[in-house]
Length: 340
Image (tube, rainbow, N blue to C red):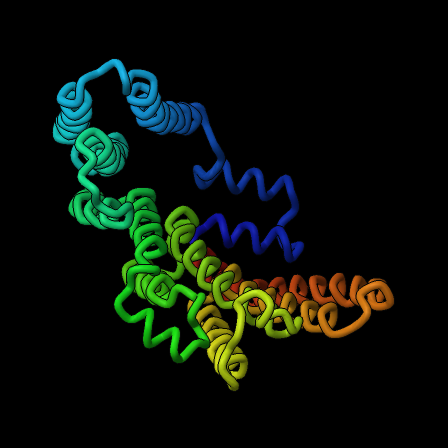
């Protein structure tokens, strides 16, 4: 556990007052000073500049598309990509600017492909554009080891899979089987694989910024699995997805329940409060959907509201209790370590 978490635990448990907490932060060098504020301002300006540069590039093509010949459009896009590549090459190795330069290179690769596709009307499907973009951005993500760039790559692949779904060769047999006809199974599998890869590379006690990506992936998988479960619980699955084969609802619910058990076990093993709360909220949403969908909503409005608030309170209490239990051993170890 990092020192800041230990101090937070001591303050929450009442073992350290606010004055002692602030003094400990100053003594350990954890409180923000002028140097840290300067670094933060530099990084914010750098990130804002990169994003504005990419957005300005899009606006440049949009405003001059009809005025420029096709070769000029492609040439400007290629020149911008080469300029960003030169910036990434000249930046300090493993520096913050180099990583954002590689992020810009990966993004500009997609802009360049879109310009080529629109200028010469290649006739390729949109999902093929995203597939090639993902292939071109992958080397930069591997070089940078940068969470935002990996997040961009995952978004590119996810959009490509969503656009590719109507053309999938396995869609006909899946449609005959029917339970997951309208669910993008490759997208769910890809997100689970990405989550497993990120968790394998990142430690459970990593910095919070490195835990954003796996939590977003877990949230996405939870949403994709919870929506069908809520529709089934409310009795609206047939209306939303059309006819279904007998037993398909039971199969979807079994997959949802299995994912809940796996998510709870994984979050307890990883000691991740956010991932632990996701399956709890999923059950909370499914229960409320079942009550509202199978009864008179006007008559059940007040009891359902009480149940909803009580459920949220129970989830909050459970997550907070687990947090205190997980923090206590590390805090006691820190006390033993600093004791004379």
